[in-house]
Image 1 (tube, rainbow, N blue to C red):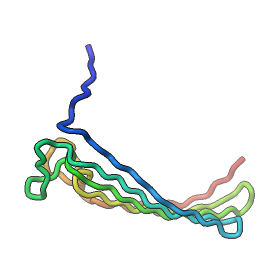
Image 2: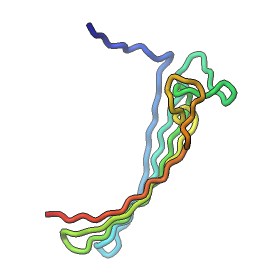
Image 3: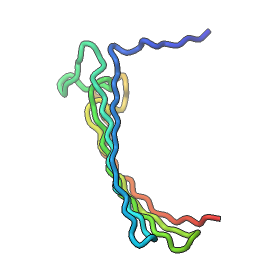
Image 4: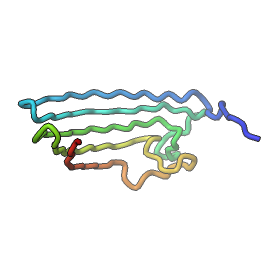
Length: 122
């Protein structure tokens, strides 16, 4: 037997996500992209027990922010090289590593993710 639990939250969980960005092309060969992303969640635990003293839980309000920069240069029609970096950080309930345990934060609440590479298209 199996079933679906569709009433497992104390109150409605609301997650708002938005992003913005800009792309600039230089001399038809190079593209540069800058972007910013954010995710916000509300307190969906009743009664709310969210504070630094009580220990944040994954059901507490929190935010995730991320910024990124990316560059791509086309050497030929088939060969291009790219490099980029993304940086993100979390706070509140989104910074909790164990969803059901109070106050168990990640070892680091931020992340730096660089990348570099080349592509050859057939």
